[in-house]
Image (tube, rainbow, N blue to C red; front, side, top):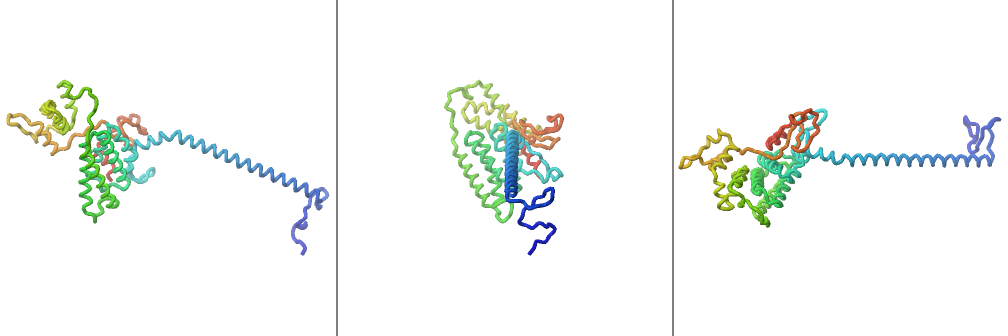
Length: 356
């Protein structure tokens, strides 16, 4: 069947255009054309390979440059993210949702904060307040972070052998709160499986037993001790104690310190430091000799009114940019005078920031 179409040249033959018109190419001409086509294809492939290699080199170079920039900025980013948090209580165009306690535990790095003696009491007091009233409102992430911080605190006490009574009270408060919340297992009071909370309660009991059996190692050094100091210096040291129970414990060391621990001026200063004059007047107690019983008044006032809280280092809240951060660290603030915008945040104030 003949080939029909717009092109009058039949397929299977190679035609070459010349000045005189189209003519069939000879075998040699076909070989030359084939060799030219092969060389052209080889050049195209070589060009494509070089192009791909160059593109690969460019991509690799850009990736190395990006990794280098990320490595250079990795430490500052982690620093900013771990020591401050923007507190927002509603959804906006810029931010969606709100901040939670679990997020604040991570961003403010409470696990590292307990290693600092200036922040230790602040964190312990915060954990105690949460144990008293905020356990049902904790999310799963916040529960996990809370227990991790508590475990770090207990391990630090085992290692340093300090603040034992304070941690015992924290564990007792937490255990009593959990017992009151877990006793009605049919109610969804706590977030999460009830078996997880029972396991946590078992850990708390184990920690309490370990704290009861802890043996404080006496220092082996034979240097100067508290009893070797003059009486005036001993009184100055006792005046720095802000808890009357520490004063009573110190008086049980030896007879000389017991006499100093009964000094009326020490207990009077404690009462005036923690309580107002109006509170003191409501709890006046007189001795048989007509003197004020400042020691008895102190413990009676402690049962009626809260102590005055004072911490070496606290969280700060910037009223200009609504950022919560530690006192020694900086935060990205746009105010001209950042110090005037920062206010200290108490442990109860910290909890109030995340109440919705």
